[in-house]
Image 1 (cartoon, rainbow, N blue to C red):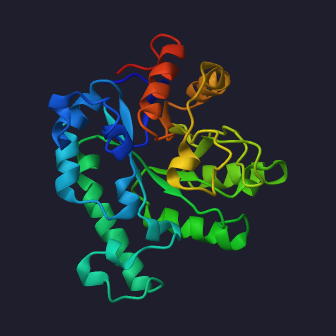
Image 2: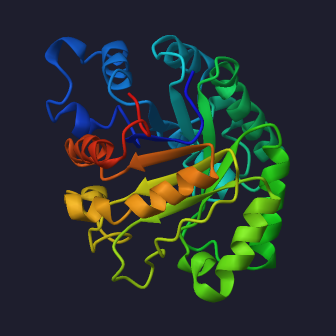
Image 3: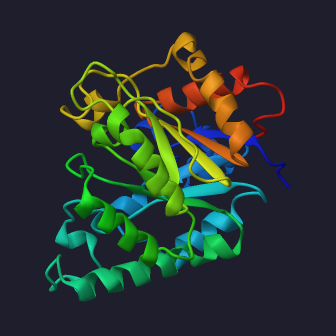
Length: 290
């Protein structure tokens, strides 16, 4: 069993097409089972981003739990409809596609199915957190805070992490209120690393709002962040010096939260796994164990 105050390092997908095509997986382990087992032998945590694009299934959750060792954790990204993102009709189960996306009954049914699909992960002790990543237009204010409270009520029995894409949540005049709000909601504040030269850049602050978990997501520092294609937005190879900038912050997070998840989202070829490997070598002995 993992000890408290560990920094667990991984990536924001193990199935990304660019990673699969990069040659990081051995030829004999490129089937779905082989890829996950290979990944889980090297890292203790991974983010599931497929659940943003479609609802999770109990079958997949059972397989993921079966194919990973005790102590391994999955951070699961919330389905797009649950965070106010545009959601394709085709992403919904066939029997729900006739409903208007703003229909409260639809939202309730989606929450029910999303939760049910993840239950095997929770039962197996593999669920790290459910990540609610809100869109760039989700700005601070009374309306947004009401949505966060409703989201927490819906996710009352789940670990919850919140990532804001609107930078005002973490700017000086708002940061204390944001920290207090997430603490009150018993939700983990997600810290991010991105390019800092853009009007939409989220400051690299690392507050602790949950004693159980802190999360940091490294998106890369490409100046096309938020504008170009997926490859343009996330194309970045982290230099060792860029990763070292975060070591004092990670150490501080680990002193205040029982577990820290550090996830790399610079998903072009094998850049994310290589950055994760480098970061693991930089972390003090005993903080991260594959």
